Image (cartoon, rainbow, N blue to C red; front, top):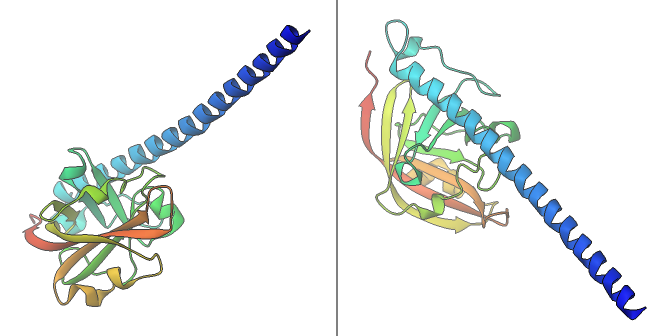
Length: 211
């Protein structure tokens, strides 16, 4: 009798373990699939925008047919070599939920990339493609390229840090102090919105689009 009861206990324990493994695999698989799908869509949007700006139909870049995202046309494409040779993300105006699900969002009040002021960009760190998952690895001097219809603008990282989510000073215009500034922001730590991670970069090079 005792042996039978022990067998039942082991069987129940094994079944519970198996269910736990399957549930974990299901959740993890779903998360991986969502990220892969979002990243693939973002790459496609970024590639179409870059192609439109570099191979415009007409007399100049301003005549290019720019692909549209969920809230309007793509306004920029960001490339960060240190995060991978193929790393690139489209940027739309605004930081709404749908925008951040397919790329990066441009904070309201930001100037156009390449101009004086603080160009603020927001992106997810763990979900929806997790574009900013590894921006904590960026260090002083690392380059960030931003492509627009006006050309290519290269920035170099100058500093990074962590602040409170309610602290908007990191993306305010006064932070740039008259310089051409770029700020990346995302949640911190991973899988939490308890803090905000930011990276500041300064414009070091501008390459106008060919007309």
